[in-house]
Image (cartoon, rainbow, N blue to C red; front, top):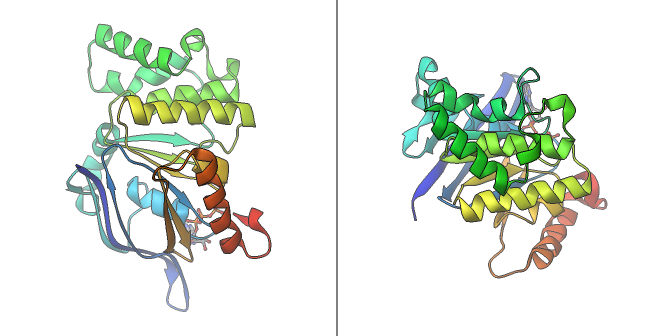
Length: 255
Ligand SMILES: Nc1ncnc2c1ncn2[C@@H]1O[C@H](COP(=O)(O)OP(=O)(O)OP(=O)(O)O)[C@@H](O)[C@H]1O
C-alpha cells in the first residue's frame, strides 16, 4: 500500500514563554492511499490546527509532514500554492465557492490554471457531476444552489485535479441531515470509486462513521484510534459513540 501522508512528531505551539498553548503536542500517524480517516476530539483539542498544518495553511513548530513523499515543512513559500493546487483538495464547512463563478467554473478553475484543454476539462467535470448528482446545477451560481448542492460542487472541485489527499474540515457542519447524508454518500463514492484518500475533521459521530479509521485527539495528542474493520456503519457509529462519551465525560455532545 502506497503511503500518502506521514505525520512525524509534529508540534504546534502558539504564544510565547509564560503564555504557551500546545495546540498539537507530538502527533505521529500514517495514512495510506485510498484510506478514509476521520479526526474527532473536543472543542479546542487541536483538530483544525492539525489539519491546517497538513494543508500547508499553517506551519509546524517542530516535526515533519510528508505528503506523497515531499516534506511539506521544507517547501519554500513560493512553491506552496502550486503544491497545494496539485496535491491537495479541500472541502470546508462554509463551501468556499467563488460567488461570481458558476458551479461549472468553480469546479474547472484549478484545471484552467493548470492549462488543461477545455474539452478534457469538460469531460472530467461531466463525469464527476454525474457521480455526485450535480449535473442540473452546473450553470448555477452559488446563491442559486442549496447548501447540499454547494457542498457537492465543493467536493467535485476538490476531486477534479486528482489530488493525493482530500482534506475536509467539518464538511457537514452547515448541512441538514438529508444533505449531510447525500454529501457523505458522495464522499464515500470519491473514496471507493476514485480511490481518493480523505482526511476529515468532524464533531459529529454520524459523519465520522463513514470513515474507516478515526483518530481521537485530546489536548493536542492522539488519545485513541478506532478501526472500522468489518463493522457495518451502524456498528461503527456505536463504537464511536462509546469513545465520544468517554472523552466528553458526563455529556457526550461536547464533541
Ligand atoms: N492562532 C492562534 N493563536 C493562539 N492560539 C490558537 C490559535 N489557533 C488555535 N489556538 C489554540 O490552539 C488550541 C487548538 O485549537 P483548534 O482550533 O486546533 O481546536 P479544534 O479541536 O479544532 O477546536 P474546535 O472543534 O472548537 O474547532 C486551542 O486552545 C486554541 O485556543
